[in-house]
Image 1: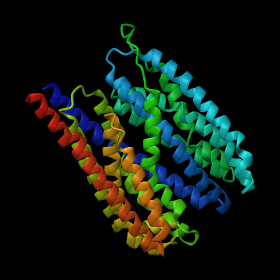
Image 2: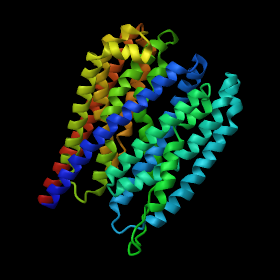
Image 3: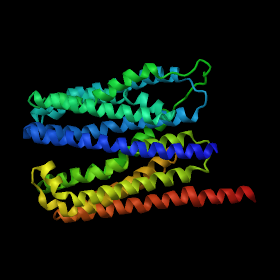
Image 4: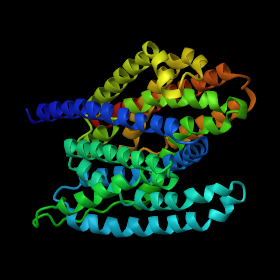
Length: 410
C-alpha cells in the first residue's frame, strides 16, 4: 500500500512538473523573443554569444543540485542545517575563485572583440552565483518537495522576465540582460535557505562526494555537446538559418526534460532497485509523450512560429520542424536515461558520450554542404546516441542485473 501511494505521488509530481514546466518554458521563450525583437542587432549579438557561456555555466550548477539531491535523499536523519552551511561556504569559495579567474581573463577576449568586455563582469557574477543558487533546490528535491521547487522556479522565471523587461527599457542594457539569468535563482535560494531546517534530533552527517561532482560536471558537459557543438561547427553562411532552426528545436527538448529533476529525486529516495525500472519507464514514457505532442505543435503552428519568433524570416526552415522535434525527443529520452545512470553511479557512460562527440565533429567537418545536410548529420548523431544509450541501459541494468541474481541464487 505504501509503495502504491509513493507511486501515485510520483506520477502526480511528474504531471504537476509538466504543467509548471510548460508555463515556465513559454515565459522563457517569450523572454528570448522580446530580446530579439526589441534590442539592437549589436545587443542581441552580444547576448546570443553570452547565452552560450551561460548554458555551460549551468552545468556545474545542475551537478551540484543533483549531488545534493542524491545524498540528502539517501541519508536518513541527516543534519540539513550543517549541510547547507558547509555547502554554502565550500561552493561559494570555489565559485569565487572561478569567477575571479574568468574576470581576470577579460583582456584575452577583448583582443578580438572590444565590446566583449561588457559581458565579462556580469558573466563572472553569473558563474559565482551558479555555485550558490542550486543549494536550496538540491536539498528540497532530496526531500521530494517537488511542488515547492516548481513554485520557486515559476517565480524565478517571472522575476527573470521582469528584469529582462527593465533591461530592454534601459536601451537593452546587456549587463542586466545577462544578470537576469542569475539573480532570480540566487534570490530564491537566499530566501529559502533559512527556512530549510531539520529537527534537532537529526544529527547524522550528510557527506557529499566532490569527486562525484567533478564526474557529473564532465558527464553533463559531454551530454550537452550534441546541442551546443553543432552551432559552433556550422559554416558561417548557414549559422543564422540553422541557429533559428536549432532554437525552435530546443523548445521540444526543454519541454520534454522538465520532469528530469523529479525522476532524480525519486531515484535518490528509493531504498531498493526493484522500483527503478518502473520509475524510469514512467518518466521516459511521459518524456516521449511531451516530445511527440510538442513536435506536432511545431508542425501545425509552423507559420505562426516563423512570424512571431523571426518576423517572417527563415521561412524555409519550417520543413525541418518535425524532424528536429523528433530527434530532440530522442535526445530528451537520452537525457532521462543518462540521469538514471548518474543517479546509480554509472559513469562509464561517459565513453558513449565522448564517441558521439567525435562522430559529430567528423560529420560536420566532412559532410556539410547545405542546411539539409546539417539536419541529416544531427539525425545520425542523435539516433546513434539513442541506440547506444538504450543498449547501455539494457546491458548494465537488465542483462547484467539478471546474471547477478542468477549467480546469487545458485
